[in-house]
Image (cartoon, rainbow, N blue to C red; front, side, top):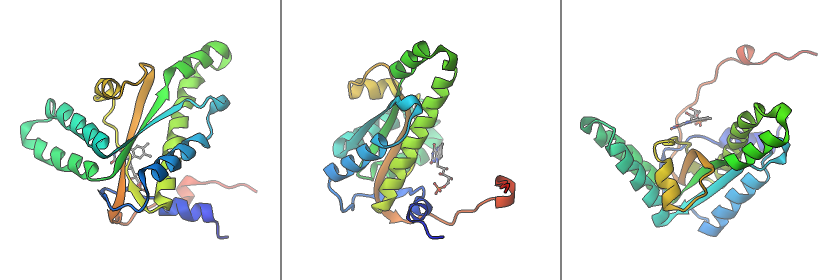
Length: 199
Ligand SMILES: Cc1cc2nc3c(=O)[nH]c(=O)nc-3n(C[C@H](O)[C@H](O)[C@H](O)COP(=O)(O)O)c2cc1C
């Protein structure tokens, strides 16, 4: 059975070689990202995901912050490789920062005490779903992206630089740009190991 949605999912990959040769305007990309997050589901329709989209020099500023943060903790001998890796992310056109609003989670925990333990877990599910939606929507537009995790090392610097609410918890960074080199082959474990279908 052919399925257009599955075709798009199958086309999404981690693209590490990104550049600035995207066909879309910044406004078009921002609108795509907003819709992908907006129409993603969340527990109790809590809409706890928050997103910051950085383009151009704002995006470069983020990767500078990450570089200077890592410079303090990565041994000097290994820092060259770190710098090269960070430069490859900065080479893209932008970065999506994914946050979860802890105030939303706190409020739900107070409001629905029986589910209190679940709300932080569901918040993590929600950011994962939002990240996947954005990643896949970008892929459909032939925009390559990866998911990175320099949080929590960079949390304070990010919040201060872009004046973000204290309750926004950074969950992931997604640098994106034109696909300069496709992803390599991907291997899959057997379906027998992963799935059990009863009928
Ligand atoms: C929850 C999650 C966390 C990930 N964290 C990172 C990360 O910190 N850095 C990175 O380069 N890739 C990260 N990845 C990407 C995975 O390594 C990648 O998706 C996986 O190897 C499959 O390759 P594909 O994305 O090309 O399908 C993450 C993926 C997921 C789903």
